[in-house]
Amino acid sequence: MTTTNTIKTVFLIVLMTALLIVIGRVLGGSTGMFIAFVFAIGMNFFSYWFSDKIVLRMYNAQEVTAAENPRLYNIVSRLAQRANLPMPKVYIIPSGTPNAFATGRNKNHAAVAVTNTLMDMLDDEELAGVIGHELAHIYGKDILIGTIVAMMAGTIMMIVDIFQWSMILGGNNDEENSSPLGLVGSIFMIILAPIAATLIQMAVSRSREYIADARGAEFCGNPKALASALHKIAYGVQAHPMSNAKPATAHMFIASPFAGSKALSLFSTHPPIDERISRLNSMTINAVTKSFSKTNAIIS
Image 1 (tube, rainbow, N blue to C red):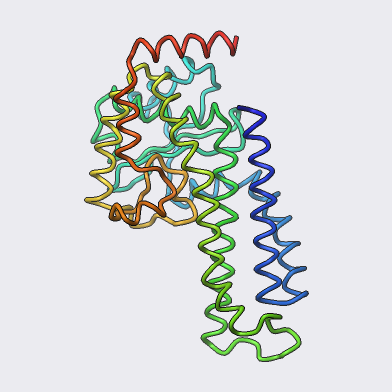
Image 2 (image 1 turned 120 degrees about the horizontal axis):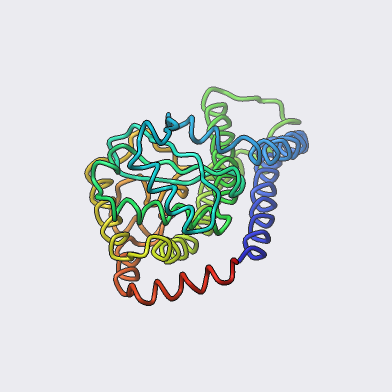
């Protein structure tokens, strides 16, 4: 799993970088391609070291200690020990939507963030299921992938937005600096680039969510509690979508922070919630315990 995720991380960084360069080429010619290349290199470096802090600040996450929130802190601490992971930093996000995510560049520099509404909505067993899921992302080294892709996807969408407004307001009429594919090519890129970034997010998120659900059930020892938590989260998101959620970071949450129909779920960064719940409900505690013991034996 470690080797696979390392290869996946490198591949996705290269893919996002290439997409950024192509966008620069189409929208700005050779000059735009060079600027995009330099920008991509800087973004990769910046994303590795600082993207987790930016994402936490983006959602106004507040770090808490054991004294400030013993319930949440103790659940994270207990499950981190059970998963043989260093204690991550613990954050609470002020939001009317129940959700959670993990971020960081590695297991020694990781953070788990949950919304205050999630804590109010779930009992201790369900909350432990959610924390187990997020620790599973840390354990599987998914957090670096997810955080870097969030930054790159956000950058791509930002560049496209800037160019779109530039075209609307008149832009640069100098033919030498205009897009080599002309106006039509630029319009196509404005439409296709965000779709490409979203597809990459989907490739990152969908497969790893099933793995994190299964491993999170191992860590908490109660797959049905995690299934129940996902059901409540899905209901809460539909009732109160996260108003300040950014599409570039949607794949980082345990469930999509956006409300939508089942038809739109085909384009979601997350697999269908009903399928995730069904898989968890089909697991038995004995099977989970056996699998967890085997995992610990491999670790030790």
